[in-house]
View 1 (cartoon, rainbow, N blue to C red):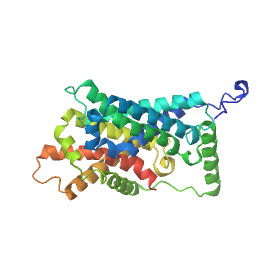
View 2 (tube, rainbow, N blue to C red):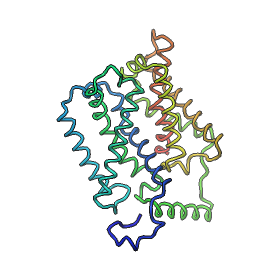
View 3 (cartoon, helix red, strand yellow):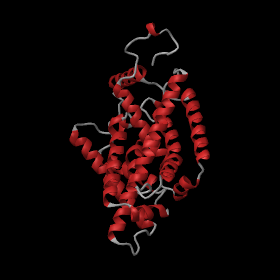
View 4 (cartoon, helix red, strand yellow):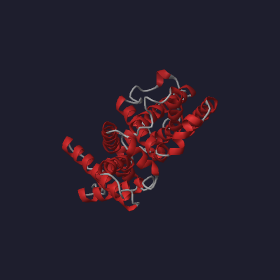
Length: 306
């Protein structure tokens, strides 16, 4: 990335982020925001605080979060050479992504309805979104393939090319795990993430309230987040630990990962006796609700634990 404080005429044209690199950063931000805030999204007390907190407190909460994002993006973000304006723009974008993600997830888990007042809806979104925004910032900076070195743009591409050349020359490159191995790791990641919320009453509450259409949307969002983490965001570990191929390989990896997430969700709910005296449709709804965090574990989570 070019030093933005230097003479603009001296900056090489090729040393700028491409559209693809920007989309990869947004993808990591979405995955990071959900990874770091998921228990928050599935907590009943947080839902209640959305309409109990006074507007002045919500504004103060947003202001403090914005200052936190400014500090993180200035000293530990993706572009440490960015000037103040660019840091502010990044922070505003992260807060915007947090607001959108919070609104989408809260709608799908039926915590935002048309019967609620605008004040209650905005309160819930704001309370949930600020933690997501911090997760977006951290995820964008730290969960990329080159996140450990905080490299972006041309630096990251050159580093990956150098690493690939070194691996080719030495023959030390490790192939991705077998299909069975990837399924085992996906299941481990799914169990790890699902276990955080499986014992809570919120899973039952959401399963009871959510309509079939919203459950279908939650399944679609689970697959989308899995696709972003595994294939479209340059997520840390994806290049080394995910088998590449055509459309069939992508669909196969997503479907098998989601199956692992569903299995992990079902087993965790059974273990915590959440199926006892439960109608079949409510049991299925609970599995789908819990499969959302499990899918995060089966995709993004399993890349981080390798």
